[in-house]
Amino acid sequence: MKHKMRSNWKMIVENQVDGYHAPMVHGSLIAANRTFATVRDRKPTSPTRVRDLGNGHTDIDHRSDYREAGDKLFRWTGGIAPERLPNYVEAMKEAYGPEEARTRLIEGPPHSMLFPNISLAEMNIMLIEPVSPELSIQYTCPVFLEGAEELNARTLRRCEGALGPAGFLIADDAEIGELTQMGVANLEPEWIILSRGLGKEEVLDSGVKLAGLMDETSQRGFWNHYREVMSKSREAA
Amino acid sequence: MMTSMTLDSSTTAREAVEQFLYLEARLQDDHRYDDWEALWADQDTLYWVPTHEGADPSREVSYIYDNRSRLTSRIRQLNTGMRHAQAPQSGLRRMISNIEIEQGKDGLTVLSNFMLLESRRSHLTIWGGKVKHLLVPDGDSFRIKRKTVILVNSDEAIGNLAFLV
Image 1 (cartoon, rainbow over the protein chains, first blue to last red):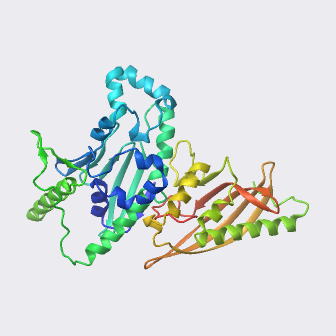
Image 2 (cartoon, each protein chain N blue to C red; image 1 turned 45 degrees about the vertical axis):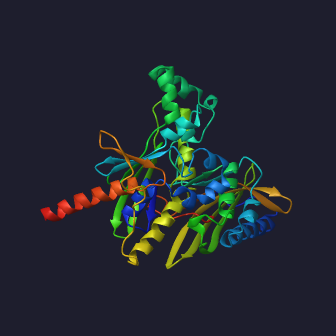
Image 3 (cartoon, rainbow over the protein chains, first blue to last red; image 1 turned 30 degrees about the vertical axis):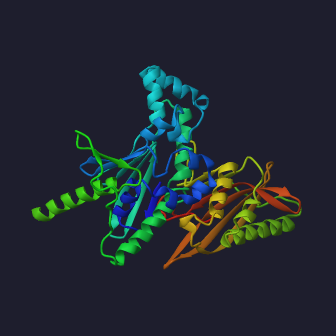
């Protein structure tokens, strides 16, 4: 699925790594869909962490939220009852053992942005292609697991519901990207400030920085690395 | 293959179908979401916009693949007025033509072409494609059981499709 967006590719990336945009950008779906509204904690006090993984890679780590929410499996695919995916649950148990399988089914796949332009959005992969300074195409593809037909069918329908030009989520992200593009083109103010949570991050031994859902740690991770590689390329030229 | 229609009272049926398609078009163009939803049958419906003609919706992602419940969610989201991709709403007008009608055992299968002008901020966008309706009789009008929209540029990158197509 190919989605044309009238914004610079970096507007789309930044939107996908920011932890706090959902209540504003996706307020219509939160109001309209009870599952979407309740499957994650999006309050400022949410246990979800945003992470700067280094080299421009970032993610929104929902696992801490899902773990804290308790023992509910499959929050990452809309909180479906495990009884509706019996073969997948059984296959996971066989592959990892009951305990590890349970952990994986609670935590789910990542919600990450690989620098510069690949988004791993749970069971979807999106690639953002710059076409011009003010035009981008987002390619969206659901992830199918071999042999997991019941999960694949669900993944496909969820991809269509959320993503792409008619998706309940991404159409609004595209709109906000376009509005942001118009805003920055105005150059007034000249700078966008991304200082939320600056200097307050938890820094792990690995160098990974963790912060709360309202902090701009992930955006800074992206932009700092962008500046670094672009400065190098200028020097090389 | 679609053949010319075989109804006895063919002219009357054609008029009724045309009136129905024009009504649907007007409700969509005017963003009358609830009124448009009311044109649909109550259950077992499908609103499908594939990414190419002949797509397999069980293996390939579609732009829209709404069963009845998801169609209701789509309308509910638009009705919040906070769906940014349609706030402000697009200015829309569509023309419908090339209507072909076939009587089947499940209802009337209706093929048509459309061309749609969308105005949003400074952009004027032309949309167009082929539509296939499955209509079931309801009093002196119809309800929609299935609607498939194949955009002429379905396999290209397309912009936001957050209005009703």
